[in-house]
Image (spheres, one colour):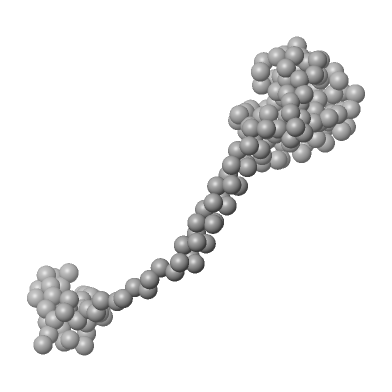
Amino acid sequence: MSIELHCVHCNKLVRAPDNAAGRRAKCPYCHGEVYVPTPPEQIEELDLAPEDEDWKKQKARLEAEAEQISEALRHEKEAPEGGGIDRGAGGGVPSQREGVEGLVIEFLVAMKGSQLERAERLVAKIKGQADEAKQFVQRLSVDPMPPAELADVSPGVLRGLLKDLLSRL
């Protein structure tokens, strides 16, 4: 018995021997390469292995762990480090850091919120620690993750604010 197929190149009827099933061959008319299919009656159905119960349990455990990690990250993003927001005497600007780092972050938040007078007062304070402030600004400018208070500021705008602060120091 032979396998009949039509050449994909010249559309002529080609007969191939049974032992050519599942292989590539050349059309005797146009010499184009054709695939000789296995006849459906020769295809054996493969039994699939049953799903492993341990695998199902492991998958469920990993999905639960991933959800816990996602939830923890959501809470971390919402709740700043240090247990809360220090509103200080500056009119409600969040500050999570101390010293010059806190002042730089407060400056950036003030600029983000168009609080220009507050930003000028903060620059005056930052100038007293200019070297340390410049180092922190340089670290911020290369950090791929902005501080949580500035997560909603585009990277380009944040770079511009950092450059502005460096020019003032």
